[in-house]
Length: 425
Ligand SMILES: *Cc1c(COP(=O)(O)O)cnc(C)c1O
Image (spheres, helix red, strand yellow):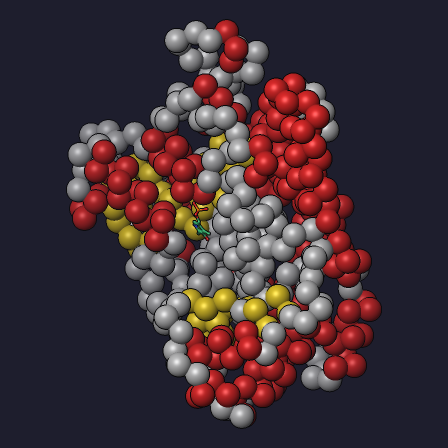
């Protein structure tokens, strides 16, 4: 556990801010003076550097027209590869193993279309019952395309308590009939980090391919996808990576799979120097670039260049340390200030098992979230009873966290939420 001597005072929060080695990054972000943003795990905030690289790309379009593909500030033709290189340290892979392309769900489709190879009795896909719905829809449709019944062929590991998954249960489900495993790195509700290293070792041992959805971990915790032997992964860049709404996603493919023909092929998966030969036979790139499909969404890639510079400067290990610390501080305050108010901390408490947000459960979560918003705090509600609060290492302060908990205390003691109707979402 993170160790420090907790004190519940505002002075102590300010002291933690003074000691925070990442605090200067806060000034790089557009923060609102009258509100506290606790939703960076859902949509990260805009930084000045992300804005700058976006505007530079708009300028290239303005000044260069078609020549922006190969000239200008950030030549568009190489942008996905360049970003893959910048992203690689965040996922623990080599530059060639990472490409910034598509979106989370589209990349999952691509990777399943490429790596799901049912054979003999090994035909099923293993996932879990707590994962994000879009992943499940994608897997169900991929099974239907191949004429398999999702009811029998998509196996979902059960949670024992509705919050967490046990690695032992997942490993027990890695049976001879499983062809492919898709799991989240961090569960989106409870914030549990799965033991990716152990799960990958067990899958590798059994000859089952394993891929991870990194939406809630990339940019928040370090990874060693390549070192662990993970076969592939995919993630979004608009949550912890602050790339902007609908920002282009990322994918990783272990180099041992280079050369695997893309399941969903398109001309941007070509070897770069062959693409404009315009042949009707695809010569795929010999890198993760092979899994691109069509023309990149340049203006939705551009902010990531600036954003990833910040991550490179801050260092993902430092980001993880502050994230653990500020989330611990939030939990300590909750326990100290909100005792006997029927809150339950629904995320794991061990450092190795918790991600970048606190999952606070309460029967009145919906109305409490609405009250928080009225008090200038932006939380994130997940039905039926979860208030997700994400103090983000790069731009949240300890003083803000202190204020969030004071707001919660006031809302509860004054029963402010009782005056509100339940919001529909
Ligand atoms: C946010 C999120 C998604 C979203 O997928 P998109 O295709 O980007 O809409 C998928 N999976 C998880 C785990 C997420 O947290």
